[in-house]
Every structure is written in C-alpha cells, then in structure tokens.
Image (cartoon, rainbow, N blue to C red; front, side, top):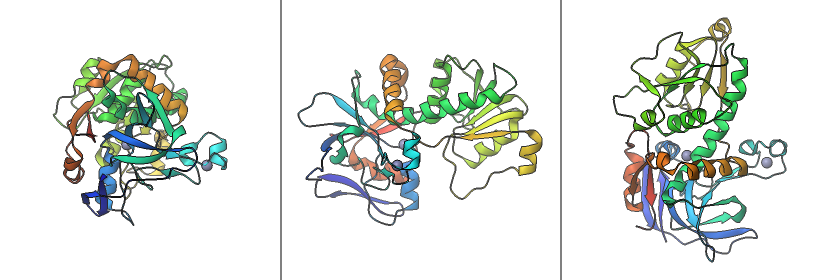
Length: 325
Ligand SMILES: [Zn+2]
Ligand SMILES: [Zn+2]
C-alpha cells in the first residue's frame, strides 16, 4: 500500500509499504479515507523522529463490513494507571499515540483498536477530520470555564489570540457554551481575512490593548502570541495557553510579575476521550455549514510531503489529505 513515511528531519516520501495484517483481539484494519494535516505533524516533521514513522492522527476511516464513516481517537491509554483511573487518559503512563509514537493515518490502511473508532454521519464525511481537534478544544473550553470562576466578573472581556483552526474551535465552543457569558474579540497578527470570526459575530481588533482582557486565550502557538497574552491580560486575569508552545522557549514573564499582577495560567493538553469525541461529533452534526468553512484544501497523499515541509495553510482552515484520490 501507499504511505507517507517520515524518515528524517524534514524528510517525508511516498513509499510502497507492507499493509498491516493480523489484527490482535479488538483491533481492525481500517481503510483510511481522509486525514487532517495538523501543525503537530509539521512540527514532528521539522524535528524528525528516532525511527521511520507514518504520521497522521486526525483520521477518518471506513471498516470492512460496516457502513458509514468513523473518526479515530488516536490516543490509546492503558485504563489501569493512576492517571487513567482519574479519567486523565491523555496523561496515561503507557500512552500510545497513533500517528505520533505509533504509525498513523497517512497511508491507505491502518490497524486500530475498534473501540477507538467513533461512528458519525455528516453530509460531507471529510468534515470528520475536524472531530479530533474539536474534541481537544472541548477539553480546553472545559478547563477555561472552570478557571473563569477565579475572575472578579461574570462576563469576562475575552481575547482570543490567533485566527487559525484552534482559535476558531475555541471561539465556537465558548459562544455555544451556556456557562460562558463573556464578550469575545479576536486578535491575529496577520492581515489575512478570517471568515469564521464574522460568522460568529466576533470583532477582530487591530491591536491587543493592554489591560482590556480578563481572559486571554493564546491559540497561535507562537512565542509572540504568548508574550502578547501575558503582556496584555488584566491584573487578576487568566491566560490560557492553548496553542502548543515551541519546546525550547521559556515563559516570557518573571514569577515576580506573575505574582504581583496575580495572573492565573491555565493550559490544556490534548484530551480526546469517548466523551469529548461524542460531543465534537454532535457539535459538527448540528452546524455543518459553520464547520464546512473550516475545511481547507483537499490534497492527495502525493502532495503531502510538500505540504508538511512547506507549511502554508489557508488562514483558519484545516487542509486534509484525501487518501482515495
Ligand atoms: Zn492535531
Ligand atoms: Zn493509563
């Protein structure tokens, strides 16, 4: 079968590889249909891995003898360790991540545990690539809303930094959460139009003004976005680091300043569970028109190496690989 293999720093090629065989108990060999191209894939590609690997974790597939499409929860947790017992499966001490430390979906077929597959029924099945990232955002927004109890106001002025897919998903969930009643604004360093913000009625500001936001959510994953978030948040406010920070940067604020300005910092790492996958599926099913605008270009597997090495997605959308073309 055809697969995109990462074999070194910034080195990805399409190869003919032996298809997976002999599923263990509870596993199936799935036919991969669509895979979202995530910034994590681009970062893993840039950094390289110790061994050859097929990436791809935002997977939509079909399984033999079953109808419809399935979204993959790529995090395989043990269910036994102390983190799993607390429901913190993303922090499982024996975590396997398909498409990260195990082979993933940039291939025609992949072997997956059947219970990691979630059935969905959308008019456009490619929208299924948004289920995994939305599932992570469901966890993020849960943590943001819980932290918002620390604020002195019930209607926090909220600034989302970064108009990419993460910003879109977080902003969508906040505007659709009955527990959240703040006013959201968007700041993005680029000049590119960001259609999703208009659809949600969110004003885009040209500058991130200091002392305006009670709650600032960093979704760009850039050092400048993080510095802006910590620089502009109000005293006694909250900064949520949602965009994955680069590994080698440090927090651009001293503990003394954090203390004196009484800033709370919240983070949210992954978090796809049966529950969040289910919620993500129902959000998309209930509002396919909104989510359709977040779906970017569909590319073939042959185009993927270039996509991963020259990262340049359309603003606020998810590019996806259509494996069957
Ligand atoms: Zn991802
Ligand atoms: Zn575990």
